Length: 369
Ligand code: MG
Image (cartoon, rainbow, N blue to C red):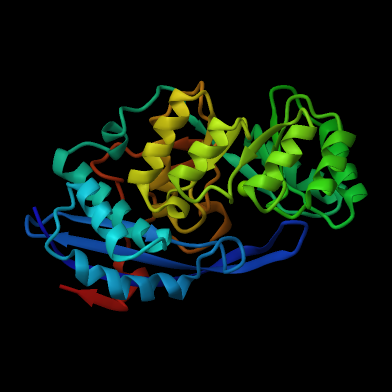
């Protein structure tokens, strides 16, 4: 099988509500998504998506993905989409880093593989678990009562897992947020306090020592692996690392040096599902718990990540955030992985189970053949 044509589409996805994270310093109102369709000489096509969370969250930028594809896509025409190790090595050789650019291609090839085998992609990842994937809420930074109100609206919808954004310049305000939320915790709920790297180590240590959160997690307190490790050495809080893990060697380093208890694996951040699966399997062998989800985008990005999440044993699997509830545009109405009252319904069709609405996509902005 050979890749014969690649179409690239662009979608601007306004958020239903402006969203703030990292103590309010990162405001996002719209996300810029790149959708890729790969055609093959055997008549099977696959879809992939790459969508950074604005331009401030990670070293990625929507138009930059399409510029990267303009260079990379012509170089993979003729490659076999089933031979993903060969294809990924070629992409890494041709273009250093730029994982978002490669991610859309790699993900579309997994869709093709599933369709070739007439199996949902989760079967190619080892087979799905019986248990549902729980949806992680995402609670924007606000004053403590406002955050409680947002959490209550998710509780009413059936959510039991919540990711609360903290990371204020004023550590006392973060302590108040966390203590207010913990005081209102329902039995069986799981909370994560995600600073999105806003704190310097001293602030993180002060906040994390000041609060009593024996059943909760703290996520990405500081910018770098070294700073997060400094914090972890000074507190007993369970920590998740996210934005500082860009490649396998980052993960290997933090696990080997026991610098975290959990991680977030996002296919777009690490270069696609092939690399995300490698990281998932390494975490399974090393006792690390995982959130598996993507950075943002349509139901296509949600679904690709959910196929990996649902094939991950529940002993190691934490909840999955989905972006579909934060945007109004529907790439594929009624299709793909869907949030049903805080649990994810996973499609059983071959591949990802998504055929995008071409009227929404419009004409491709770039075509390579
Ligand atoms: Mg995070």
